[in-house]
Image (tube, rainbow, N blue to C red; front, side):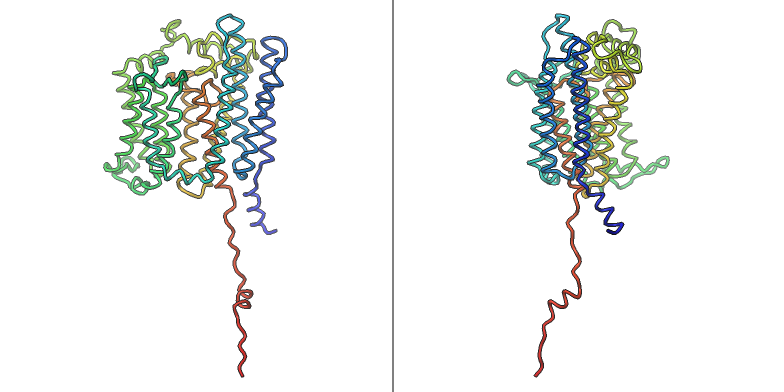
Length: 466
């Protein structure tokens, strides 16, 4: 085989065997951590280890088989990374459940409920891969997705179903079930942004005035970024949610920059969001309070800064390798199971585990950008960038808030924190990334050149001259 043929064979390998091997390692992390929790807290291996391990293995195997059947050329690393994070999150939630029950606070079933949400997430993951055979079909729903995303962001404001929890109005309650519509809205907005930018990126890429070696955009092209800025400020002011506001605006800005390759958009967007955040700090009490707690946490301890300060104490006590699962006191942090699950991991598994988790998220973002690079269509490229930006921005906001790098926000840690809305939506995001990668890595239709001599011999007719 020629060198070119060898290279093409390497590029288009399916790599499902490598994925299966990595999934075995990921399951070992999740099930091993669950067993370690039982040994650390109760001193015995959990009695339901076989049932739990079997259920978790069944879900992951079902996802893997689905990828083998309908997306055989998809990226082989994404699913194992997600399986490892989700399995570790379930084990940490089980560790908190046992502590809460031992302290007589209440009977908590965070791990059991999270496993239920994971089951629903995997079902939707499988359904998305089976039903969506070509991601380019989503481009037809550009404006429909945009309207749906805006409608989902407005839902928490409606009387009767909107709920204000911990100072942020980002929840709705329907038939006794709480749901965070913003988690679905981010996927809808990625589809809308990708479809819009594919159609209008040539106009948006035109440069306007040049200032300090940067080509700023034309004034007439500021409409889309002004509209998205208005949406993000609405989320910030009306919902008191700085994290979601930064997520939505940063998502649009990242996709706009990739589509146009104009750094001027980053300058304009950064100045706009900085000015909006400053105005919110001046006029919105909740935002100002979060900034003050971030800058002077000990001035508010043990009052409103109790949670972030206790989280920092716990992570400092955990040190490099942690106290061990079951040997810390993560329950001192009120929301250790959701917003501050990373502090629980830092206290009991140490800085090493936190760095490993951040590396896993970094690999997810890297694989998303790799998918964007090799994608054959503009819509797929922008969609992969947007889906990767969701993880990058969300993890930056969460980790930065827990460690004190930036003001604390209310976003969840993907696949780790307790929360059905986030978990289900993120499993769908991974399904979309796998679908795009399958299309990008799949061999292009082969058009063999027709042999000229064969063609001539077949088309030549012999005519006898008498």
